[in-house]
Length: 400
Image (tube, rainbow, N blue to C red):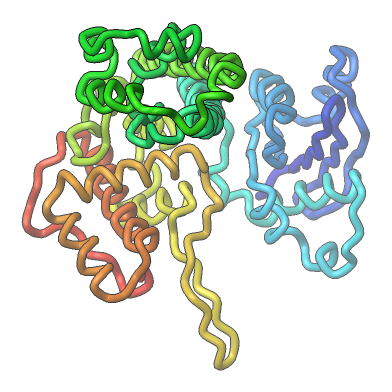
């Protein structure tokens, strides 16, 4: 860059700044807290419209990025791995790590490579960010729900080992039904018609089972309170999942991306829950990433589902998914690919070809993931609904 550049090494409540001239001379350095007085000192230090470069640090960079942008300074938010790889050679060789040194490295990175880092320019998008935060919250709650279901299923197996056909994960009615049971005598006293109301096709099997001596009859009443606690947690988490789904849908509408979500849902495999998560993880306008093929390649890397090659001399390592992108969006893409294998004949045939070549299930699904992603990028790039064609993109030789 031909203008001064500023590097900002951000901590929890402070930041170390280094201002470099276009000729790499240090103009000023300093450490500033998030107080209004220190913020004004930093702003006075910077010439108008000085580009500021900082690493992505979770929530800590938000304050500085927001305030500096409001003051008219373009802020570039760099992935920590990218910043490390672009740091000056002298710093990389010395391996010294200090806050002033990191700030200077960021300023030097901006001075040398700022013109190529346009895609890292920070822009606040509260509604879209809310969708991503809600999606991450839902993923954490879903993981907790899965763990609780496993614990409850284990308890159910201990108090009723003969009831292997009773699956808590597959039936919400079973959870509600078991919470009404006071003890084993109460359960045995229920009529078949009552069981059918709550359990459907499993009612007759349970009714027949309860007529016979039970293996764990002695421990049933003792362990039932523990099972009830797990079941109450399950009901609470399931209700929370529904509320989060509604909130994600509302935030998608508020962000103005409802039409993109609708278009994404025209792609086989991408459904009600996965579409908002995937769309929120992508730029609003994919055309800024270049031609469609280039955009597909960049989005593939953004989600971390691009292949990584490892070769050295005669060593040829296996190609694996990098997994360096958004984990929640990547999981949503995996779920979409798994559904697409069932509902789309082309992708099902592609999956079966990969399996016939000896690839493991997850590897074969990862190949389908990339195809689903290519379809998604094409739909959003052209702003059109998905239409099945006979000349879809085929993977290149580097994506095996």
